Length: 79
Ligand SMILES: [Zn+2]
Image (cartoon, rainbow, N blue to C red; front, side, top):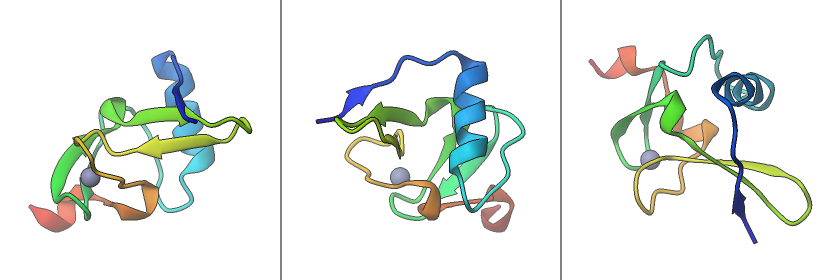
């Protein structure tokens, strides 16, 4: 079962930096292009959940999109 994690912006950014194996995060205002739902998303809107084992999960803010860090690309490629 996943529960939403209440996070301060500073803590959220720290988690992104620790957890994203693909990209650098300098601020929560950065945008990424989600290759799954083909939407531009903003770091601060990314949803963060914790499962029963204490593992952190990141989800695309788009409704019903299962996108995660592996699906998020730098937006410059899509302008
Ligand atoms: Zn998405």
